[in-house]
Length: 254
Image (tube, rainbow, N blue to C red):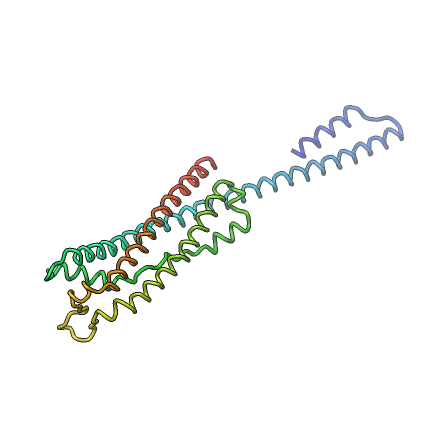
């Protein structure tokens, strides 16, 4: 393009040659001014190209970040779904055990015995899903998500903050269940890891049936875990909505 402007300038000087010494000075002056203009145009074009390249680079980085964030949320959904299913199974064991207590049965079938064994041995399991948010925190600090989409930024921040609050609460509830296990479950159950011929978990059904501490501990375990299951359902729904926002943003990014 600069070559094009230079040809125009040269043609103007050739077609309209100035006369005399003053004319020669004017010619040199015009030449110098023309060169300055060409240099300025060249610089502006170079800056424009550089700006375009930087914008393009930022755009590609944003797309990569959105895709990585989508993968991260998909991993969250898979982990939450698996943990939710696991905890629902434990709660089913506890619910069936309480029904056996309330049913007043005098003897247990093999399946009923195993149901109670599962409830007693899995009683204390309640831990949050550890989520590494260092990378996300860094991106937020740099304003990446906010620059890409303010609504996405707001909802993702809420998602992270609620996840941290839930995890902190579940950690404390899990610690409470461990204490209840020591206080009420362990004194009423014999564990065997040595004799292969004996049951790994032995308990006297009539004894634990009449033990209010065991019953209340099982009830608390069920209630705490059910609260986490409900929270996980909400987090799965939020993560799915965030992925939908990301997909919408990616669809309009090309």
